[in-house]
Length: 359
Image (tube, rainbow, N blue to C red; front, side):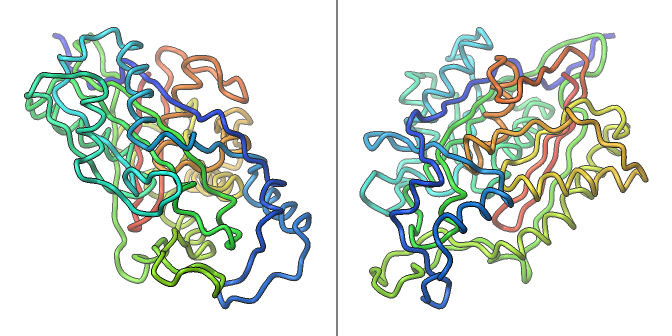
């Protein structure tokens, strides 16, 4: 008897060409949240920043591009990789946080939706291809996969394009040290129903939202310098609170996901975690293994891209997946047929999710 699986049949990503190093931030004066300048030199700040986050450089989009442009490029690659007719796509689910923000402005533009813009950019004319955005913080792309899976399993869709795109460089307060974390990029994939003889593809999912005192761990706020326009707001975060939240919630969500998949941590070949902070991600892996009373973590289980690409929010996980599949990942990881992959993310909301995927 054939099994209907929900599988990723094609991936694509777009990494902007403009490299911004930690040293490039030396032209900006950093202030604390109270408006006082930091006394440490930029060299000291950059060294500590790299030690904690792992970030050496990041990528920014060209000035003439916006997030939907990046999404079109990544989507086109995913469609080509899946070798499908673009008109056969039932849904375009696009994850972002700030919409299209033209260079030189800080105004979010989400009318029309970015999904509709990507549909137009791809030249899809089928009106039955429904395009819409989702806002779920950094876990947006994984949530898009979960949503696509639900529609496919319900019979309401057979094939979905799930896109993640962001230009965080357009909403940064360059007087805030946290501005060094963020980057631009896009990732996409085709998710569809595939008949098979055994269970593959999406085999487990977990998600949650904590919206009490955690709600505003990430938020829009004023610049750290009093000289800035008080009417302009920038992306802000309570890094310590986010770190503590992630270490508490993400490992539990990952284990719950594996439990639903009927799998054990020893079955997992790769863990793809949102590239937010290398130190945080490595601690999440340690705590996940501790939930299984195991401290023997394979050296090659967690691919990283944050060193060169920074944190592109929704785009980090799909970009990492695409680079591994294409053999272009920084650390030259590989995924083979039958491998179990665990993907997880955490971000604004505060939201956490995870999916277990049999490749």
